[in-house]
Image 1: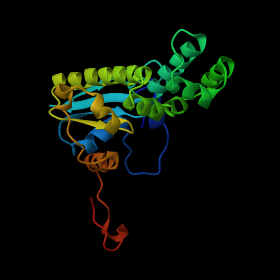
Image 2: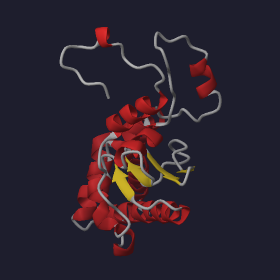
Image 3: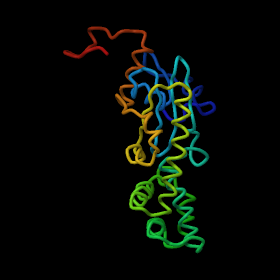
Image 4: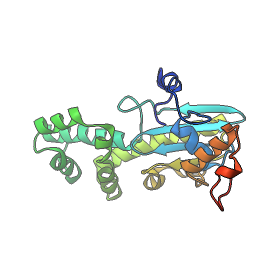
Length: 229
């Protein structure tokens, strides 16, 4: 789960009684990395509503970012949305030109700064991330302000990728809803380190369960025709 490494979270979860033989708590990044490389050494960079870098190499783990929006999660959908709102307010003030990208942001969120600020005060990371597809589409069409947002996100993602490689991760996979559209914004020397994930986070969770499990399934409790993983 996300947020498992926040202060007190793991301890609180461990104090709950569960109706299971064994329980293991891991971050969603760790489980996704297990699945992406089928338990072998490697790294992931998740670019979705939030963002995080994670890698395992020779028995060591490295986490980069993922401390939560808005203080972290660079290159994420929420971060793109936040930058878009900031630029939209500058356009309204006349500090920058009101190009179609920023006008659409204003139209979506409110017809004036008061309405836009009121929206932002109540908005969640998911709400901000809803603007990410707009930013990406305008960036792909050549809008300079949208390009500025997405290009900066690509630079931040590249820093994370290079850091995971320097840590010793032999392969890196991009995951998350923005991953496929962000590849084109990365420089060729960074794309060189990327490889497609071999499986998803569900496969990682199953692998974790097999590693942690201590009691085999009793034959009498198996469904007919089912296989034990």
